[in-house]
Length: 140
Image 1: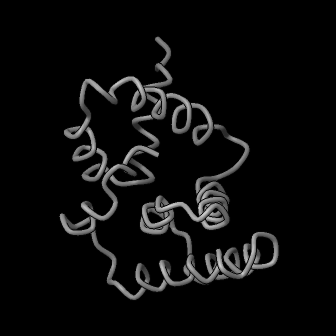
Image 2: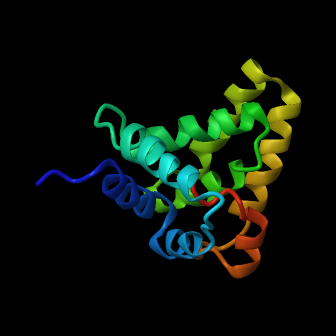
Image 3: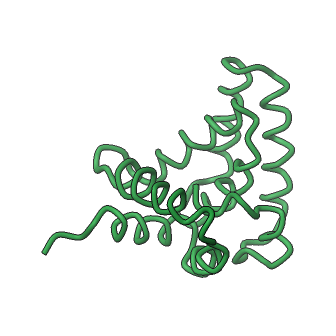
């Protein structure tokens, strides 16, 4: 039997974001956002992130660049998750330099500040304090 997109998506989410984080995020799903959360799991994680042509490190760097360029709060989640898949902070700095050229210095400046906060911290599983700062971003 073939795994569903949802099952594949949950597996990938846990690999990238960490099982503990995903399990805590699952407890916050409500009737209001359940369909959206399923959609994100199936589409973003089960379809796009699960594709074989780019490895997880590359997808992480691309996602970080996009989130930085768009000025999205979700950048913090993906900066933290990059540790789970072996992205080096120096690679992120290179990506953010690229963002500065193509999306603007203000976007890169904000992203560098977020990255400095993340990488000045010791590697750890999301704390309750960190989770509250990332609340609402858990499934992307």
